[in-house]
Image 1 (cartoon, rainbow, N blue to C red):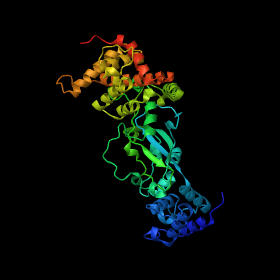
Image 2 (tube, rainbow, N blue to C red):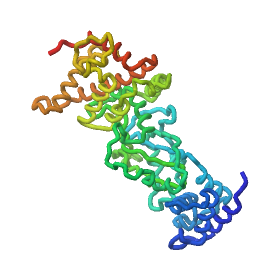
Image 3 (cartoon, one colour):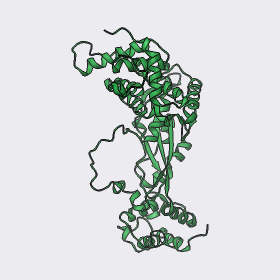
Image 4 (cartoon, rainbow, N blue to C red):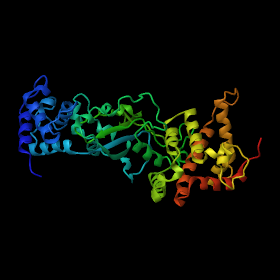
Length: 444
């Protein structure tokens, strides 16, 4: 691609401004000349709201000396490459978005890639690339990205391509995308805490039997925790969020002997101990990923209900909210509107059972575990005890909490297997009901 000599010249003029530069860079002759050139080249002469901020962000990310006076003695970059990078920001239609998710308190995990995600432990140098450390250093002079400490944790990295607005200014001010008159207080059902791509990857990880691997389920059945997600775009027009701090993760005091009578105190990551080795986890994930990929399982009608949402919601919740989310997930997997409206039932559905017992029957058939019907009904009764405020039985035991997780996980895994046949949801649920009704305990 030929070099835009006018753009290179405009950038050279800006790079010649000595730090710290003018008090208002956007009003400087050099900045205005660059803005006019960019609007003429890529915006048909139209300057939109926020354009100055977008150009300023891009210049800072590219290392403009007067925007990064805290970085002394920077070598002058190849201005042809700088011009090409800036021009690309005005021509692009997508941006690569990277979600860096710390798997806090994880024990042994393998390096494993699935779809647009991967998990593993990364060296400090690898994290500097993933976080784009030079860009963060230019944008945040007072915050250092401590990759040495962050490298002691496992991470999940998810990437996706996102469409960007044609107007580069809108990429810095996301609120410009909100339509006028929109109800800002509306609730979008099943909207997740984290981005959809992250929760989809997390759903896959939760199909593994973490509650079976945990050494101390009374402490936590989870094999890891996900306290936050760091989102980074490679769009230079958008200002990156501040670097994450290692203190936002879980540490414990640690002392090791360095001499006969000398000990050195430090910190190390705190982890949830599991029986599983990294190889155990890898084999479990490989088996589930093969099934999940077959015939686009998550696009199946069986996943048209919020199964994925509530399994992830349970993982991210604690206490009664965790248990409730697991039970709702089972109901989302095996419940149907026809359970409450007889007129909607298919021919052959002659079972005189309540909606809750029908869900229990389907669950027991799906996971091929006859006793699961009674286990689910007992958990549901416990749920009613909490919701309806009965005075007795208000404490939920560790065993009940882990049982709710296990049944929900097995339910989700069974849907993955059932989706391979690509049958309609109504037909699958009727077949499960017919096979599972015999597992129901006598009515009270």
